[in-house]
Amino acid sequence: MSTPTPTPAPNPPALDFKNIQGDILGGLPKKAEVYFFFRVEDAQVKAFRTQLAGLLPLITTTAQVMGDRAKIQGHKKNDANKWKLLKLCGVNISFSQKGLEALGFSSAEDRINDAPFEGGMINDSALNDQPEKWLPEFRQDIHGLITVAGDSKTTVDSKLEEVQKILKGTMQAVKTVEGHVRPGKEEGHEHFGYLDGISQPAVLGVNESTARGQESVRQGIILLGREGDVDTNGDPIKRPPWALDGSFLTFRYLSQLVPEFQAFVDANNPPGAPKDLLGARLVGRWKSGAPIDLTPLKDNPSLGTDPNSQEDFRYDPLSQDRCPFAAHTRKTNPRSDLPSTEVHRILRRGIQFGPEVTEEEKSKGTIHERGLLFKSFSSNNVNGFQFIQSSWANNVNFPFLKATTAGLVPKPDLPKDKGPGFDSIIGQAKNGAQRDIQLTNTAAGALDLPVDWVVPKGGEYFFTPSIPALRTSVCAREDGEGGALK
Image 1 (cartoon, helix red, strand yellow):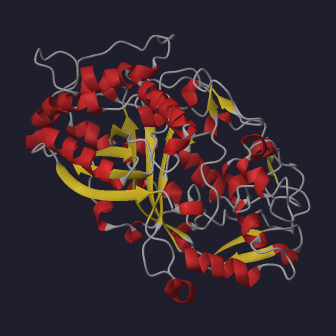
Image 2 (tube, helix red, strand yellow):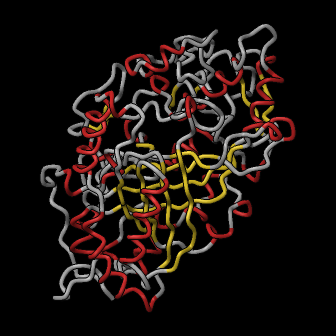
Image 3 (cartoon, rainbow, N blue to C red):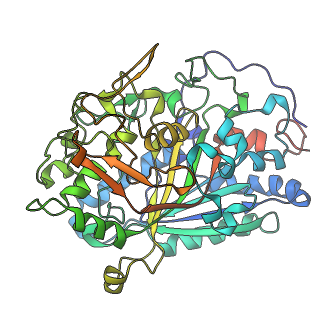
């Protein structure tokens, strides 16, 4: 049972990077990453919370991540290190709603007030997932997630072993998933081949410099209890004091049908057009990362590698000539299609998993499992990930021109009764129904999407507490004060 706690102060203390887990604001540097999902049985709760104190020195803070990234930059400047990676490793820990309840955070005072988190991802019908396609482990109760990221699989595996020794006998392993960056020139690209990790928002007071066109968000868009941590009406959300400077982690195990996607693009690419033009219009960027809004007819790789060009554009709300309304990047970050998107922004921290496509798969289709271990942070799943997936990616009528008291006004000149369609990459129809997309304003611009090329096979909503919350609320204390120990 929890100790009653006072209402949070209206003005929280100044942001301290030593109090925030490192993956949230800084992103743990990584070439490899392991996700260790676990469950704590009732008989193990006290031991887990006691031994968790021994793990705290290993938990990587935002301050440490900033220092590590500075070390990486210095390392790269030395020509002698050209082929050597700096050995680094980071550890973070997060808990699901069921995990918090198992640890004793079950009173009204401890309610964190985020419906998707409290209900669990497998019960989130707004996503249009098909739970029967989920891996069996993700259909079980998962209480927590330990993330270990580093310069190599060897480093990461060694650190995970150290973590498991500290918590030995206090938890049950549910599943371990490994991710890694793709090799050679494909590093930074997801398995369909498109440069990933672009279009991250800058957080005010955190990012010292921003690229041209990069959008900034208030701290409370990412961190609970900070300015901007508001509900759909713009009102501050009531949070327990221990939730300050934590963040919701959304995890998705996304399987990608890479040969099938590329075969579709090749078969339907306009005659005489550059290779992958259709793919670029479905995604919103060329494989180089260059935005098609800036270079709609052919790739310009220099725009993909220049941070000041990657983000320096705004969509024409009246036109999809340069970029289709339903292109993946436009659906998930509509920029000037809306007056403001700040409350819906998230920080993405995912990594690829699985092998490269084999020659046999290029002719026969997917044989080996591969895809994206999607991970994002935000202060609000209703405004954040859930909203992006359900109200934008899955919504065939989004983006619309504007909302009025009489209803939504559609984009101009679309064929009668046709909206922009699904996000062809992550958009999901209810019960796996047929999807389509409207790539131009003519009837000929309609394109059926015969396959779900990205298939969710598991996931969960987690909460990543601050370091002080871990120390004083989650870990058991000898004096019995603080925390929610049963």
